[in-house]
Image (cartoon, rainbow, N blue to C red; front, side, top):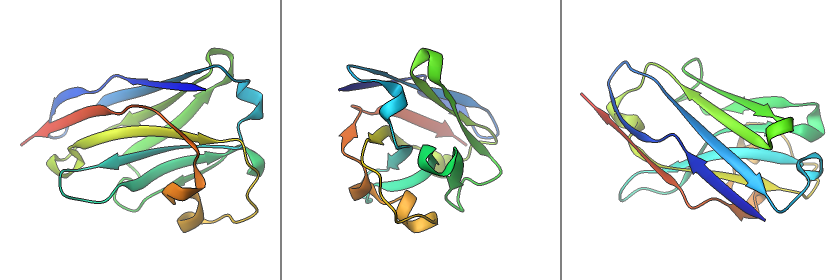
Length: 131
């Protein structure tokens, strides 16, 4: 299983970036949940968005990004995207994608954005937002 993020870089406050996470070595149809996390220097890794395919593709967002970020999936390309708009300097972090094949009956905001739920991770991509 391999996940590769791309699309990070430098953006100005108020700008946009789109992150991609492309998977290989597995069948995308077997993925139960897919999520994006981020980790800023000196801070814990935090979940920002997820898709739960077990709930028919229901999407979850952390309060800090709701209304600004959007998660989408392209099954044909085995790729999940994170569209990031109205970027803020506080969005500066390394962004990671993660998946799990395990069906977890725990759902809801906290459960879906909990790092321990996910078993396979990408290497991360840097996003820097300047003021």
